[in-house]
Amino acid sequence: MVARTALRRSTIALVWIVAAFAAPTASATPRFHVECPFDHFNYSDPIRFPRVTHPMEGHLHTFFGNKSTNAFSTYAKLRRARTTCGKTGDKGAYWMPTVYKNGHRVKPTDGDFYYRGRTSPLSAIRPFPKNLKIIAGNHDAKRPQSVKVIGWSCFRSAGTEETRMRDCGSADVKVLVHFPSCWDGVHKDSKDHMSHMAYSIKKGDRHVCPRSHPVPLPELSFSIRLPFHNGHHVHLSSGPFYTMHADFWNAWNQHVLRHLVHRCIHGGIECPSFEA
Image 1 (cartoon, rainbow, N blue to C red):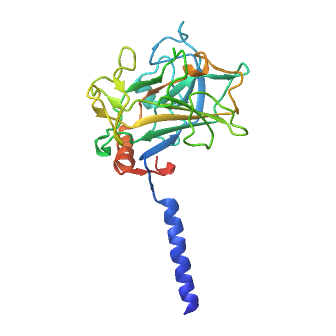
Image 2 (image 1 turned 135 degrees about the vertical axis):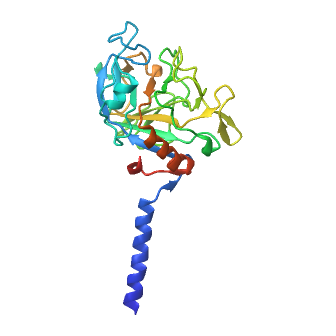
């Protein structure tokens, strides 16, 4: 009898352990994320300079996700292409200026892309419309940008973003780029590639979209790990470190994206990475 009781208790304990690892976790910021490793370097910028292979104002970019992204990209071509993303439904194109250390271009170690429920109520957040193009950050910045847009941190050091790179000791440097999550509801792009989107506004303990951009979308954040430990002798292809910016072109399978937004963001949970 004692042995049977002990076995029952062990079984119950094992079930709880398995459930703890398998079940989605509650999160202050409901989200899902996709790992999309580095794919290629290219001077193209298909949002700002479509069909221009080496723009006069251009600089070298570092691309993640969609393997076909170049100056001649179209939504249809992106949808047909392969991807480095762990979730095959994500054909999105992600890119940023290339980082140089001691004069040598840097190949990022990791590329993680987070989709968060930032605005309230969560139930109002819609998936990105297909073919939406967004730019975050200012490539013409003259000083460090707000950490609400560009944050520099260290690998495995969440919540420690600063406006400039710091010494991470033996850890790698990490850069985070946060995209606006409020859409005007009409335009998939705009002349400056930014004015069709806006950042949410904090009101009390919640975030809401401004009246000019009333449609809440997930907040996309790039989290890019770089294989060096401090900001010494580092610059970007766009200029000093504070000119960091990033681009996103939505080419997700919309059915998959809608499912993840409903499951994770509307559901108010942080989905395990294997679900994304």
